[in-house]
Amino acid sequence: MTTQMMVRMEPELKASLGRLAQNEGKSASQVVRELVEKYVRSRDPAAYLDGLWDRVGGQLAESGFRASDVDGIVSEVRKSPQ
Image 1 (spheres, helix red, strand yellow):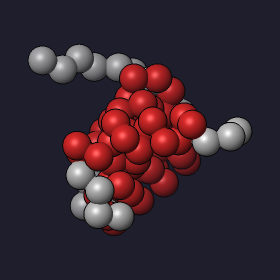
Image 2: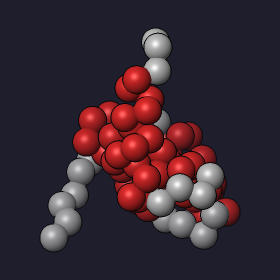
Image 3: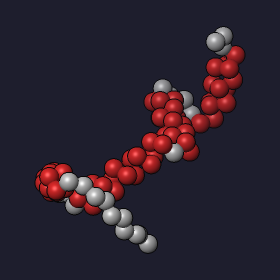
Image 4: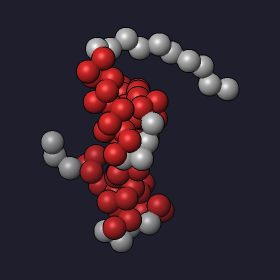
């Protein structure tokens, strides 16, 4: 279920938003939802950590490592002098 939220903005800004969204084949509401979702994700620690693990896992996979190699890699990194 979705809810509504009123947002006040200058008429010129609303018109620009509408034009730009239309150029992308989106509604102004879709653009606002995307921006709010991005804002929340960027400030949510759990989402940040999930994204970090996804990036690290992707880099390891690209380097040829498997999930079973991760414990050994972490142990080696922890042994390294800081």
